[in-house]
Every structure is written in structure tokens, then in C-alpha cells.
Length: 197
Image (cartoon, rainbow, N blue to C red; front, side, top):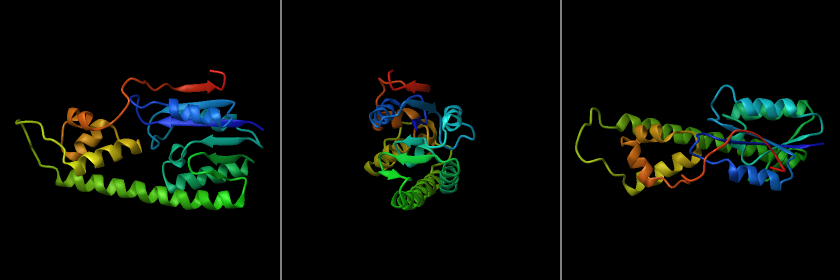
């Protein structure tokens, strides 16, 4: 009965290291890692992790949004794993589907996660609709404290690139780069990582 880990970040500017360290500490013998958004139709290492799982194994992820791109998808993933005799453990939310309580918590948190994502998407649509049209020249626009917090939240959610966040807030990519806190020294890596690595 193996513990198989899966980690994912949305862009190469983000680091997989923190997730992989968590998964190793949880006892994962093998870790599969993708560098792409959760909305991607195909995630090569996610597919490889699913194929590697056998009855009695446990798939371990750090957060719910690492596995599914929507509430419907999360439930489908959970159901498919359950039918194959595979458990799901989510470290940050303390979920373990081998218990009835863990299954209940999983479904509740999946619903909350979907609600939060829809809220962020709605705010993004509003920001795009309110963006000034044809703005050219002049000094680059600075972000208000409120937009700074919004930019950071969008970046931390991992669902949008710097370019997309800049477009949503009507500023340049360099402006977002000045305000968003991120670790530029680390580079994300893909592929399977064993616990000995």
C-alpha cells in the first residue's frame, strides 16, 4: 500500500519545492509534479500518477485545488479513486477519505473551494469590464492598496498568469511584478521525484 504524491504549480515562476517537501514528509514514496494550470485538459504527470495507483494505495496532495479544476471534477476524481480502492489524503485540509468524516469534510471543502474560485472569476470579469479602453502613454498606473491585495490574491490562487492579472487590473505586467510577492530565485521543475531525491 503505497503513498503516491502529486504536486502542481500553474507557472514556471512558481516553485514546486514546498509542496514536494510536504509530500515527502507525509511519507510519499513517489511524487509526480506538473507545471501547468489546473484547468488544463491534460496534465501528463497527473495522468501518470493516476496510472501508478493500485488498490490499497493513497493519493496524497497538499490542497484540494491541486487535484481538481472544479467541484464537479473534484467529485469525479474522488469517486474514481474510491471505485479503484484508492484513498485520497489532502494534507493542508486534514482530509482522509478512508474515514466517513474525512469524506464528508472533502465534499464540504470542495464546495467552498468552487465558491471561492467562482468569486475570484467574477471579480476578474468585473475588473475587465471596468478597465479603461485604449489607454496609451503617460506614467504607468500604480495599484491602489485594494488592487495590490487583489493582485496578490489572484497570484496566490495560482489560476492566472502575471499577464492575465495585469490585464484584469488594467496595468502593465511590470506594475504587477513590483507589487506581487514571489520567490524569483526558485525555478519550478516537472516530473516524478522519488523520496530519496
